[in-house]
Structure formats: C-alpha cells, structure tokens
Length: 74
Image (cartoon, rainbow, N blue to C red):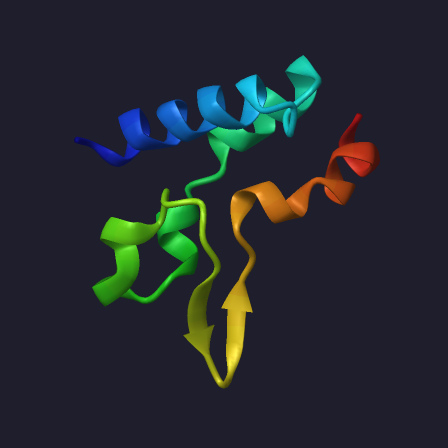
C-alpha cells in the first residue's frame, strides 16, 4: 500500500476514534508526510500508530498522541 493510502487510512481511523475532530486538522494531517521524518529503515512503519525513534534517543510521537496540537490548529 502506498504512503498516501496508509496516511489516509490512519486519518480515517484517528477520526473515527475521536482524535481528529476538525476538517482543518484532517487536511493538515493528510498533507504532512510522516515518512519523511523517520529514518529510512523505519519508513514502512511511518503510519503505524506508534512512536518511532528518530535518533539521538528521541522519538516522533505516535499520531494519536499529538491530540493537544489539535487545539493549536483548530
């Protein structure tokens, strides 16, 4: 499955679970290519709803864990 399709599927899931509540956040979620923010060897996992290591002991948050940001963009 392509990254675009996986991103759209995760968006639908997060919307159904109540994590994405506004159209504005949905549009932003669909535009941001999460696979570009993770190491190349982890790109296939970019749209799994889990945190992923990005180097130097840091992680990119699981998409469902970014809910507080919704209020910033709403």
